[in-house]
Image 1 (cartoon, helix red, strand yellow):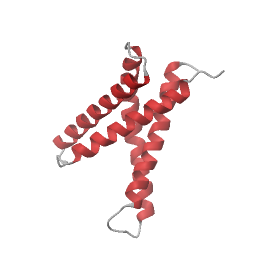
Image 2: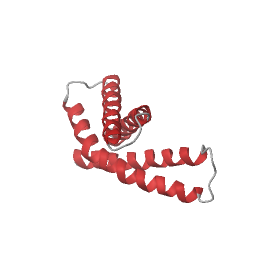
Image 3: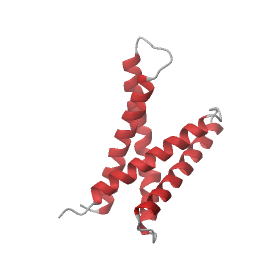
Image 4: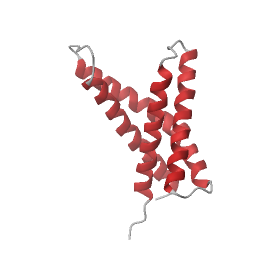
Length: 133
């Protein structure tokens, strides 16, 4: 399998995992229970899949390619680079949303989400590219 297909598969799997976990978290820890809470779970899941897949493909795959081409080959250096890039992307996305009228208080949430997304991507990518003997 080519390297690009592995990255694309990693992006899709990562978006499914992060979307599911985020939707489950919002469903399980809601302060107010609505009658249509399950519908809200599915709405969050679908919106997360759409937006996260787009962000992973447009931003995540090029960043992963750039990090892979750098001279850093140790796990720790990749973990640090992926984590920093995830936080940076989260901050940039939140700043763009602030310009659209969202409150500035979403910046820490998106920073944490970017951190989690980038680390999920890294670990799935490591699993998919591991040499099988």
